[in-house]
Length: 364
Length: 261
Image 1 (cartoon, rainbow over the protein chains, first blue to last red):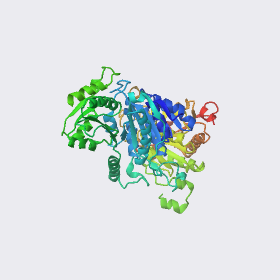
Image 2 (image 1 turned 120 degrees about the vertical axis):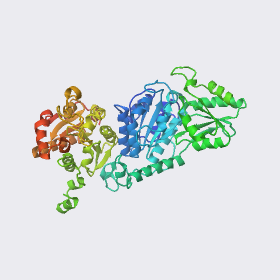
Image 3 (image 1 turned 90 degrees about the horizontal axis):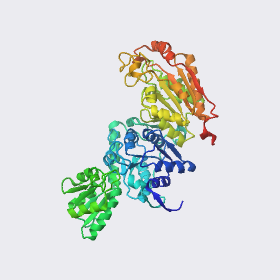
Image 4 (image 1 turned 180 degrees about the vertical axis):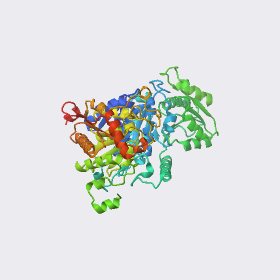
């Protein structure tokens, strides 16, 4: 394998996971992410790593629970209908504080929806779907290279916080082919997973491990005195993530009066529109949230203080716009371009740069 | 007998595995199932490498053994065990599940593991009802049996007939061993223990998945005394759920994964 290669976004998931030291992939076929399990099926067993095609997404997520509980780096991938199926397991993983990575290649919804691209799972992913009010770290790449790199970041953050991490892709990013530099990223060293269930005799302290989702009863090293103190511990962890892991890209924002907010594939559409608008003399920029949870509220709030207005562009009826409203708190105007602004009224329609430019011109 | 009393008598390997008191209802046999597993783990010297995967239900919490334990979702134990065994083949991995956990909510997980022939062992406790939640209809509830959700007795026209999991498991090519035991007498206890040991051995010998179903009493929800519960099992459960081995394979014909070794 050469270091630079032309590769699909879905395939970049695999190379990223391999470079992250992923030990096992467990997944169920669903369009438009089938290239991911197919890549793992062909590349993982020959490297002595584990690939299992599961009987369902429900099964895949509980395999992640087992693999993570035993201290391994594990992942699955799915698309929107499968996202619903894994929610019970997600809640268990978050409760037991088990690290894992879930790649969600969004397609159109609701229900079976369409098998083409969309961004209609934002709220389901950032607000979490299982019971109990846990949190997932959500990373949103916009290029094939970012998919590859963020797979490694995802595994790192999952281990760092002992928490599930979602890589939120979509049907466009998954299927587009771009030049990829395959590389291994370096991260800060992490402590050994002394809590993992590896068999009593393999523990340094020769003491049994008990991984479960009744957290107040956990023996050391993961014990909390009672249920409420455990919830307090979770809350502190989530605040720690909010304080330290917010990531976003700012593009031509310094002097911008109008800031476009977009993530994933539409962010690239917006960049093209912004470049044209800049050439026409309009002071417009892009803020692209890279972490959707934690969301860059503070970044947007500062722009409000500088008098910016916002244009949210997302391929849905409007979901991320709720977070922009939370950041802005009614202090400036927020306009919206969404799925109804696609160039075709079909599941293959897209939000194109011309439509975004038209709106920028209207607002600038 | 308290832990202290046990220690005064003699601390054996078995005592170290059965390290805490069993908090079941009077006459509950989940503790006995735990003891069988503990005895077999001791005899095969597996407790140091064992990872027990438990489901949700009385079976999961009653007999807590001094081995690594992973508890996940209701019904997902075979999936969880699958991943652990695949990633850590040197670990000894088994599940302990109830009938509802295994073949109602966890049917997909169970059948998936059987289909793939995972090198794990599945112990299913069949007490013909949902014990933890107060005695509702289970897939294994007998026809005519009164539960809190079949107040007139299980009517096969409405809720079907009891499911025979040991016989079902035996039909899977990748399953190496399937048996059903009961805890109605010392002789049946010894027979059941033999089944568990053979099922464990199938994993150790990398032959295939082992399954053992154990009929166990639930006097509290059956509204019987412990002694009458044993009689009820002999008179009603065993005629419906025949005891014995349904499959005992040497694995020479159907396990390509192991042949690759």
